[in-house]
Image (cartoon, rainbow, N blue to C red):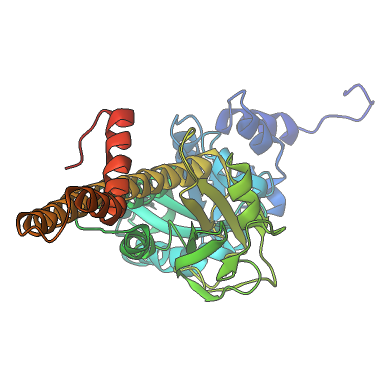
Length: 407
């Protein structure tokens, strides 16, 4: 008798013993599998399960790597605890659910692959398969290393599919993001004459892989302090979000970033900008991050505005990536402005020396021909060379201040 007074049937201890045997673990997923009403799934009551299904489950459940079993015509799911995080919010209803019902957003890609395993009995594998999954309330770009293997009966019929899988999303996303940073790192500034030239040089680099940078705009300060959009990609209409000019005192996110000169700021651009769809799919980016381009103790070089990938979360790795882009662009702009200053110093010195030599020769000729008195010659030399001397003084003061001669 049970504690409630109801007689215990002979089938109950058998069923409990069978479930304990099939799902013996103390982890959350094993407990869920023991509590699942399998009779309400296409697999039916566990007491009627075939020996092949029971053996397959005993292989999957204790594995330390993520493993999944798809069984029968509807490919009903049974998975272990290492696989549970992969399901996201689909867990726990994903246990005992047909695969196509659990993963409808990816079944156009997965269905044919699994169909070949079941229909032809051939294994299938990939190192980094791109799948768009909805596990956390949004469509997510994910990458997977997996192996699909047929599970056969004694007579060779394919009864199910073993799935061993590892998510490699972080590795793949980091790979293409770092590739974008590396492309900027190898840009040479040797032949670049101005910040404007540099911006036009680096924008195609940013646009090369729009998974990393779906759209972007680079702003440079003009002499009056306003921010001018010097280059952009992935934008159909910048409108209010990324206009061609942002006054320095405007209440605008680009101007705010320039004034703050601190951490990046993110804002949503719905209705303020028309961006090109993501190269990954139909979604259009709706968030942009603004980062000031400046070193801690240096002048503002510009502002970088980057559209965020709508298929990836704006998390810490994403923040690190955007920061690396900004640092690399700041370094390039600083190098170009330093070279521009060096050229200006050298040109000033050359002009001043050439002018003084010319004036000195002219005055000497006039004095030699007695067409000028000594007093008039010195006055003329002083007045005529004042502009050149100012340039010489500027160069001299710069040399004293920096300790460097112009090249």
